Image (cartoon, rainbow, N blue to C red; front, side, top):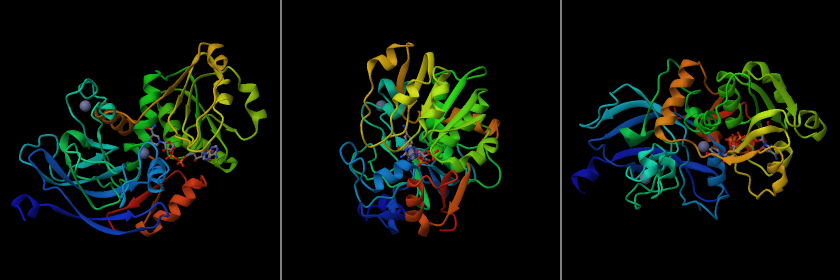
Length: 357
Ligand code: NAP
Ligand code: ZN
Ligand code: ZN
């Protein structure tokens, strides 16, 4: 064993071994804490629907799953060790990790703070490799993470951190397009799908000053409209509810994970309006050019956010008292949580308590 290997960090996680599912305890090592690294004792890891897509190998064509898989890219915890050259963090600080842990740092996208689009491909937090392209990455359903300080986020928060973890993916994925399309007072914003991403989109769009309408297939969620800060709730499964809203929205953010028709929402945009897709349904959509041409409409996508913007989002959420609504679970409930998330039966994000796992 080399001296470096002997300093490797023993880690306990929870892994799934095939697309049939099931999570089991899984022991592995993370690299020794280097000069620029911090060691984070993970307290909470959110369950993003992307974890489910990958655990069940639903993205096998574009991003096949490399088992054993330890998912988790909504990570919050406390720093327990810092490398000699670390300047941003000290022991005891709260730190977060999102969807990637490194990138090439040299390409135009990295230099512009859009590391998620690194031309050499970012090192994803799990189901990927470090930038050496050899060392496999394991995610936040585990008790520790070693990460370069430049790819960890600073979290300002008091007390229980469970509602902070989902900001690291659901928060930034909704904040980034809302910001890019300059959502603000006087604007009407629609959020399609009230799940983990959707409920964060509602809170953030409201804090930016917009009038927010939720489009949901779950009538029972209407009871939460006020507490989430939304202005209107529309049951989207009945097309008759959408017809009177044609041409009235400045922006619509689509967070739905399952197949659905985006055309019915394009029709709700006013002139110059934009619809941004962040959900990843399994099948392609068919869009008629005229649905965009009439009204000079924009259809866009958005992928998480870079490190500077993720930090900006965390600071925005801290200033505005925004956290995720969570159901905290133990690791033995992960599989059930997956099944319930698929049935849209979560209010509104499952978060695994890794502190007591
Ligand atoms: P989630 O918590 O499961 O929420 C998805 C919501 O979609 C559900 O709560 C439900 O809302 C709605 N929905 C589900 N099935 C539906 C159906 N058959 N028809 C219409 N609506 C349906 O998932 P999430 O974690 O928010 O993630 C959502 C999607 O975004 C996933 O595909 C995920 O992979 C993707 N994602 C993308 C990025 C990115 O960077 N672009 C980042 C993270 C996640 P209602 O009950 O209100 O209808
Ligand atoms: Zn995610
Ligand atoms: Zn790069």
